[in-house]
Amino acid sequence: METGCRDPITGSQEPPVFLSLADVFKCYGSADVLKGVSLQVAKGEVVVLLGRSGSGKSTILRCAAGLETIDRGTIRLGSRVAAKPADLHGRVGFVFQQFNLFPHLTVLENVTLGLRWVKRLDQQTARRRGLDALRDVGLQDHAHKRPSNLSGGQQQRVAIARSVVMEPEVILFDEPTSALDRELVAEVLVAIRTLAERGMTMLIVTHELHFAEKVADRLVFIHEGRIIEDGAPSQVIAAPRTLQFRQFLNALKAPDDIMSAEAPAR
Amino acid sequence: MNYHFDWLVVVQNAPLILGALGMTFKVSITAEFVALVLGLFVALARLQTPRLISAPAVVFIEIFRSVPLLVLLIWIYYGLPIIADIDITPFVAGVTGLGLLYGANLAEVFRSGLQAIPRGQSEAAITIGLTRFQTALLVTIPQAVRIVTPALANSYVGMMKDATLVSVVGLAEVMRTAQTVVAESFRPFEVYTFVALIYLVLTVLLGRIVDLLEKRRP
Image 1 (cartoon, one colour):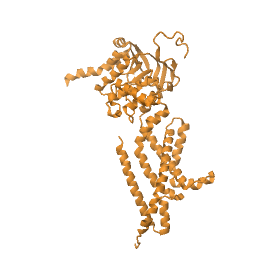
Image 2 (tube, chains in turn green, purple; image 1 turned 45 degrees about the vertical axis):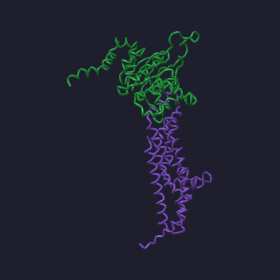
Image 3 (spheres, each protein chain N blue to C red; image 1 turned 60 degrees about the vertical axis):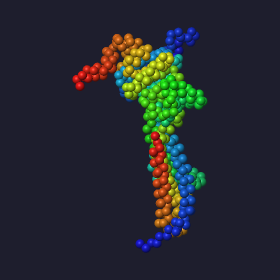
Image 4 (cartoon, helix red, strand yellow; image 1 turned 180 degrees about the vertical axis):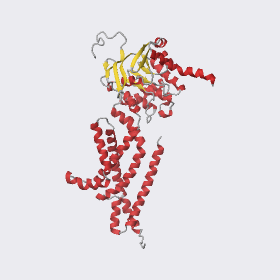
């Protein structure tokens, strides 16, 4: 599997596929969650993954980060095949829906933990890089607070900084704004967009359709464990090929329609 | 009842009995330390997926939570030297017995603390690139310890009281010293009342300290 994928002499001229899942299967007990998912993310590309709840989109991310073992298929990162989940740890960043900051550490310690213990940087260098990463998400003034003293949006930005500071090859976002109050969503999306502008390779699960249209290079729709739409956002949204995706788009827009329809009656 | 109280016995022997508190604390604090280390390791082993690691931990916990402390102490002090050909001092027997028994109990305390830490915590640590060992050491254990600190402090109160049982193998702690005083003075009521009061005061004091620990937690 490993050989013959790229020409080692001339080097690749096409944008290299960076993260690739090939024919990945995953089941939990008797529930088949992924039924042969193949997905490629090129270097510097931003891919948004859409799907209904339970469609398997989070599972794709968890497999790609080495948080789950896969039953079948291949996950490749850079030029290497990840033979076991641990091969992905430390190379694939992950931003969780629930932030998962370490509550017993300060904001800065959250960001520098990996620098100190994984990258083995000395305290001063780690501190400097940690503060830089916090500045990038606009939180350098909160470095010495505990995560519990920050808003949800701030916590998620810390989580982004914690991930970015480790210089992962790709960052995965698992519904990064779904746990946030509406007014805090924008600040997190701005932080993600800034990363996109810097050329960070990202795979993002989100329901923020406007964000996806603006930031994503590609939009992928997963339905019942299979990818059934894959293309440029404007194109995919304007002309869905499948009924399931059309229904999904309608469902996303539905709350607004219902509210505007019912508002005058009340 | 025409018993004549003689509290002078207590006054005369108070320095002797209170002096033995040093040994009570020495044996209970040493055993507590043993129990803390043992309990943490057994709890970590208990939570591993491979049966080869978790099963011995389960067996350890079951055994030492089931055996009465008095039986365990006597077995260690009088029984073990016969087959093992080793000389066990009362102090070593006391630390071993208390340490094993409390180790098994604290293992369950630590386990509940470790299980209270959301899975997302270790997942976040692992995706950063920390090893499983680093994750436990830097992320899960520190949080679990915070959760169980009051329970650990309470366990020490129990340990201090249970250390009286080590008198049975002849360790000269408070209870044993009181027994020798009684043997000479024939004043069990006065002397043991005094011992009870000592433990009452100590327990109330330690209880206050535990309360403070609990309040200080964020």
